[in-house]
Structure formats: structure tokens, C-alpha cells
Length: 79
Image 1 (cartoon, rainbow, N blue to C red):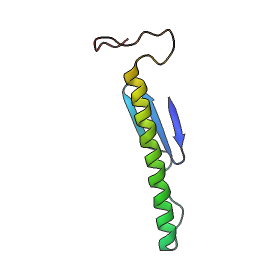
Image 2: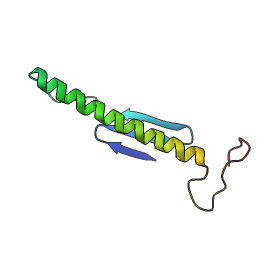
Image 3: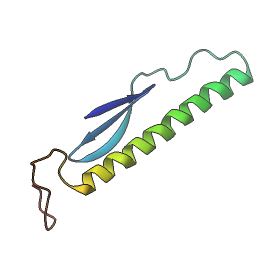
């Protein structure tokens, strides 16, 4: 499962959640200090959103089965 949050992907699998950059260039061309501050703040906000999404997906993992009818893991064993 993958979700896109602006310039980042949040990937979710049986191995956990991770964040990947969608592009090598994360900001536009900045010509003054306020451009730099705005660009970096947007990246920070996006990373915060990625962190919230990762934590939400980890809660889903801990809860058990993702789909109705699938058995939830028991006694530390994978379903």
C-alpha cells in the first residue's frame, strides 16, 4: 500500500512503514530568505503528515487483519 503526501510517498507493507522522496528536487529555486523559509516549512509540514500516516498504518498493523474475514495474527505468529 502506498500513499502520496505532496513530495513524499509513504509505503506500508508487512515489514512496516517507510517514507520515500518522490523526486530528487524537493524545493524550487529560492532567491531570498523568505523563499527558503517557505520551501523548508512546506517540507517539514509534509514530513509531519508522513509521520502521522506512518503511525496510523502501524496501528493498523498492530490491530491485526486488514481485511474482513482474514485471520488476525495470534501468539506472535504471522497469519
